[in-house]
Length: 268
Image 1 (cartoon, rainbow, N blue to C red):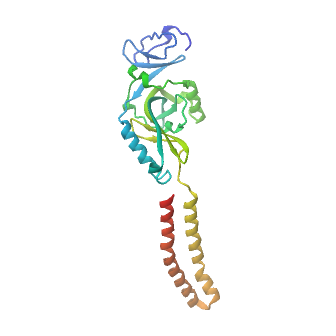
Image 2 (tube, rainbow, N blue to C red; image 1 turned 90 degrees about the vertical axis):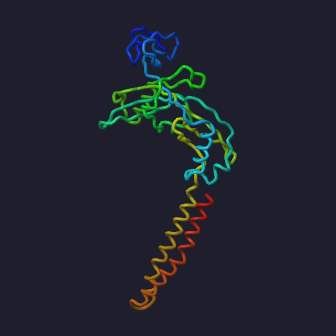
């Protein structure tokens, strides 16, 4: 942190002078007791989210996600959790006004392999002043504020549009699990119970495409039966015979195709 006169470091809540020790990043205002974070010459609010999910519930939420529609069938039964940790992970919290409405934007304040965290919903009413008692479980921020603002600029959001910036520590359970001899990571946010994962064993699309293409091909072929019948026969009678044959074959094919689709859904 650059050496600055005390008059340049003021509490963002009450304006009182802050007197941090050399290298100190987290400061509690002696006047209003607000907790702030010092990032070079910037002073921003420092918040935390209180956890509402314990480890057992977090494991249950992870199992529900694994059993969902996005993952391979029976991932919750076939995978094995190898480790679990808990920490308060830092996120840069930005607020901007657009179209008369406020929008909350998030960027990781430390290195993470799960960039989906920026999609986390953080209602302002759930934020609490950061308490120093969380330090032992808090992940230290390593991404400067200017870097996070640069990421926003890359998304077309200029720093001038931001009306508030803050550092927020959110409670996270990190689970490592194995499936087919590969290791994956999933996060359970302990305030909302949301599960985040960038890479996971997803359902294969090929079997579903095969079922869809087979169904389309069968009914496309049946659609030509009346036409071929009319060409090979004589008059409207042959056409209606072909139409009846088309309807009959279609009724026979429907349960077969439905059964094939159900088998694919059960296996994939």
